[in-house]
Length: 188
Image (cartoon, rainbow, N blue to C red; front, side, top):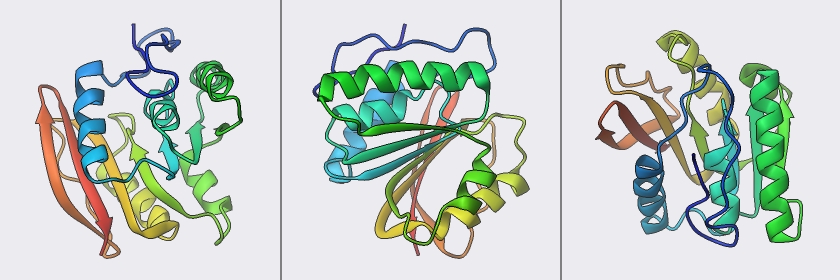
């Protein structure tokens, strides 16, 4: 069972998406990821976007640790319902509505996002069947909505190739954790 690791809602168990349609980020990977993000000082006060959110665990962890706002984007109905339960849990712990759930395809959500919607921290954990050209297209759309100092984290199988970064993004680090690999990018 996954949990919120730290912050205001730390220790609370998170609801999981039933079945095997999602790959939850393990607590070990989540701890290492957030340790890195805290060393980069990008969480506190951040506007966070969690694309292909699954259970929303990365987004709600960010809210628990001091993010200003979090948008969870998930198309699957079961996963979106789990996102909402986890968002409600964290919002209740925070005493405010910082986490919002959007049941939408990622591409549609980014196309509808107005120019004023800008994020400081973005998580992408796309399903493995999403091919590299499709991921590249999402990254291209996303780049239009990033703060100059934003950090983008892409989580994939360690067997997946490095994402095809659009000209507007450049990878500055990567880290492998068993079957999981994280790539960190920033605006070029």
